[in-house]
Length: 327
Image (cartoon, rainbow, N blue to C red; front, side, top):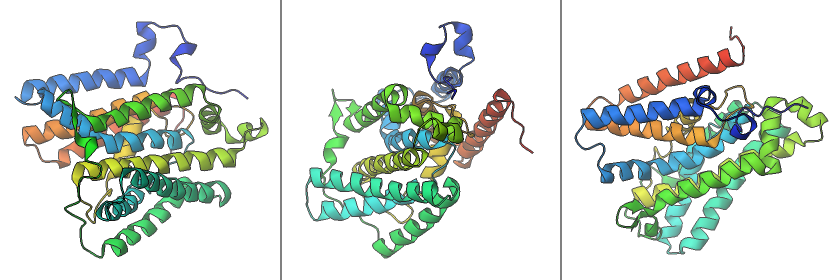
């Protein structure tokens, strides 16, 4: 079995020409250009407090996008993460109201998320339902559950059980942003050196060849979905710490944002190729775009028009790069 190593810089000699061929580096240059443009066009964009706000608002999306990267490397998509986050956020809100403490809350969020992801994985792996269809179905079920749990009434005025995530380290760095650092360092190592991480790439490249080489494709699929579910639990806690409330529309746009960040960051829509570093750059690209457009007073719909443009360009380059034609 031949496994693609496009994502591993260590497999090719370092050079400027090599960097210019990597999607992550191109998107990074676009990110720098984007920051420069907003820095010139607005007066407050490059202020430390504004940049820290961008990072703080990026945590939920960044954490879930890391998991979405694994799913898309396998050739799938998870539409249910937003609804799952909503269910977890409601449970977390109830637990905070009951004053159950941070540790039980964190364990509950991780457990519920992992369980929800595992259910998705089982449906995909052993029910033989395409991931986008399976997770669309569970998303609708969970969205109905959110409505039933909230009963049309928002959860508001939550006491600061997880308020420690909002403290400023050194007076300027939001503690919650450390979650991004921890998650992405772990996932970078996981995808490069851990057997399961390597198996995810192998399955994404060729599931049949992976099976014939001894990889349990079903177990890998379930594990990947369980991981994104657990990450959704982390994102739900971050959401509660940032918002202090849970509304009916919680997580509604999150799946599309995570998919957009992952695709813009260079993950192949056909599977087998991608990196969490590229995804993180994609997350920052989207959130900086959102912040800059807000500061400029431009209608927010323009944000998604620009994101949509970059998604189309990214997928086009991906298809051209792999010499595939979509009819």
